[in-house]
Image (tube, one colour):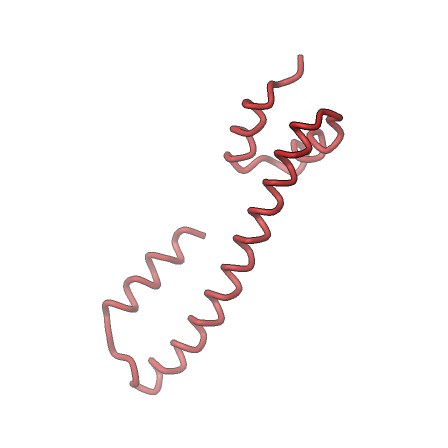
Length: 85
């Protein structure tokens, strides 16, 4: 029995496996394909944000090492942010 579109959307929010994604790509329903397109678009945006964040972090670490930024508050927030990825 095929899952409903709502079930598939919920599944996509829960980090599906590569095998599950492959099965969903083979599903001919338009709603499933739209959900997959949205999933991949969100993943791409998240990856771009992570790349930008890491570049900012690299620059900040250079400044920290030069003692230009000595805020433990900033360092703590960077660690908190990184735990989300």
